Length: 252
Figure 1 (cartoon, rainbow, N blue to C red):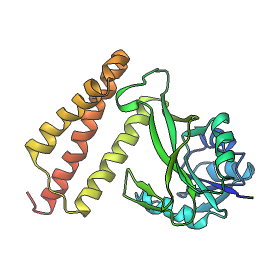
Figure 2: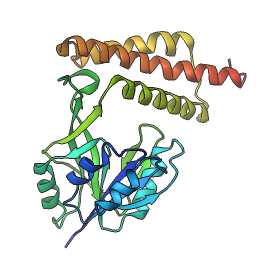
Figure 3: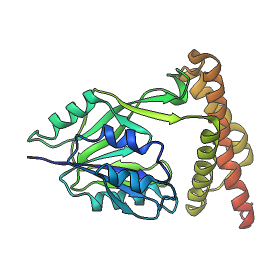
């Protein structure tokens, strides 16, 4: 009978890890890849029966997920972030499909929930993520927003995965800063150039137009406008950081 390992990346997630692991209890193994947490993440996870392996993230999410694949014990793997929760209907659907003779990799419908807000359009609109697949041949590429690949045919599940994006604005902007820095570093390592007009002035304008108008962020009212502006600011910030990284190396 096919068995499943749920792989969770974590660092200082003691506030999230209990609910996250509880949502994955149906799996045969819950594997935590911990980036040397300094809070009680490890102790809490182990007390709940999860297997914890510590491994340095080094701002490279792809290699961390790849490490998790290598550590997984079972034939099937499911990637889960510490701020995500597997709904009960989704867990039943997962248990059903991994018993099928024909193997596929599965896209999961993800509902993004912003604390105290009901935004469902623009940058927090529901999306789909490729997370469930046989371990065999699975690979991960990228740096900040990594991509997961599987040699098996793709299919879709229908039940929801919940993503609790942020609890407060301080958390939002702390993550904002980490991700824009990591993105700029990735671009620099790939020798990406940066145009002040094209990337710092025009690209953020397009980012706002896309999420606010095309992806209907305006339907979410005030919070839709705020999140769309922040998306534009995120776009500008990562290119500003790249711009000055390149200046330090005499590329501008």
